[in-house]
Image (cartoon, rainbow, N blue to C red; front, side, top):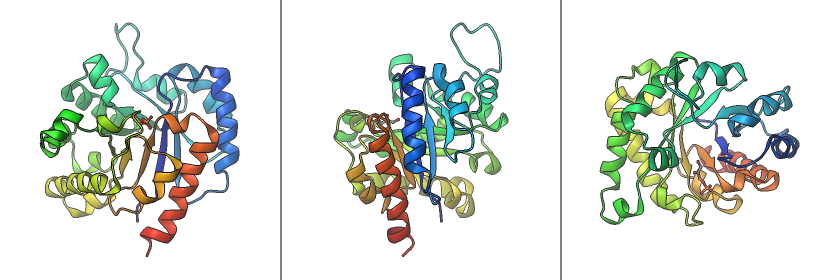
Length: 260
Ligand code: 13P
């Protein structure tokens, strides 16, 4: 069984001082949880301080982005080696905000995924359709292309190190979450694609998270679905109480719901 994974994407929120106070709340809130992997992804500027504040806790650290090269003349960019040095184990790649506002292509994301794996970082690769693409019934096709291209040329061993996140763009920051059935439809489809490409053994090992307006009160119904293995949480990860409640609800539901 895939143990639930809940990752908080803090986006461009929290100064270092604010980050430290949030981490303190999260550490205290989740310290008894054993059957859920918890990851927080603060902005780059807070990574170092947060890594130190997480020492001795089971909460993992992730970055929100990285450049595919290890070093070079890329003003303003951060390399995999740099985030690794700060203690990151995870890195979010291909978030729709990166695709939309910074023009990131599947090809560029694919280069990042390969470098992340090379440097033993676990990439959380985001895919998802816009509202227009959903309404015009192209959503399966759009996500298939994102999966095919952003994960191109990965071996079975490589793909087993990747975490996927289905984040429908229309559900991000809108309060309009996908229904558990919509999430399951897409996520079971993604698993079928992985199955066709890499075989059942590998496909069953890959975590597929859902992201988009996840809140404490919708977490249990989402994670009860067989192919929803956790969540990538934006807004609700910025408060210790709501993030903790999401983690606790996911951990509880995975014991009572999926195990049966
Ligand atoms: P919200 O939870 O704020 O909708 O954001 C989701 C997201 O983009 C996580 O990466």
